[in-house]
Image (cartoon, rainbow, N blue to C red):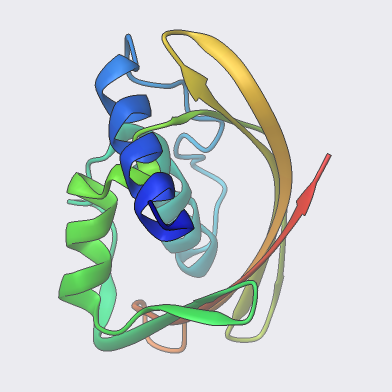
Length: 145
């Protein structure tokens, strides 16, 4: 069995074993600017799997660890809601957010695991381009902790 298939099967198993939805560390904050609130909605959807509050441009893209993983706003929304790669996310914590012009940068720890047991933590830095109230690009750098 090739490694890609093992990874997909492992992710599917992990998704089926996840006991409860995770706890987001990115709930709305009334003092957020519009751009920060847009990025925060994306982070919340990583854990909640509810992308209804996330506003993507139709041609939005996402690059993770140098590989393009998002090709359109509708695909990114669908992945947030149904993608098995997100089902193992348990929580986001230690969130830091900065904003410079149209760019919002977030840095946080993301815990993932199965059946309520944390298996791994990674530090993620994501840079969002939000020129008009919608996310146009996301670039994610992931480092094991």
